[in-house]
Image (cartoon, rainbow, N blue to C red):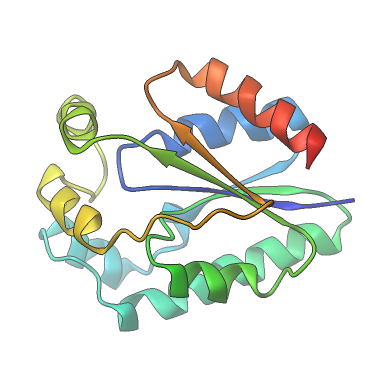
Length: 168
């Protein structure tokens, strides 16, 4: 079965690294959520202004459309996006009732902030990290959800995800 595998978490938790490695390892299409943001959203975040829910809904519509396109081609997709609130995940995953798996990459503020300070990102600055933690609603336990601590190397996380996916 082709699946939508969503890698979620706050900015700087390693979604892009883990997601791209996973997509390559399982021969799935890789969808980088950041590339689907509107230019207006990117400008807003680049100015250190957190997105509102109203800013996010069109973005989620774009993500859903891209994922549906991949699945319609009888392929699996690995989508990386923050999906910080349960209402966002419900909206996104509800379009794929039997096909989704969710990987939550979690870590503490200090670790993630240090990673963000060591990297360059087009628009996501460390100043926005607190706003992401403020709205983060960790996913509840569910058979289709895997929570992983980011204190392991990305290659180990991908190995853990692949093992879990083979069982789920």
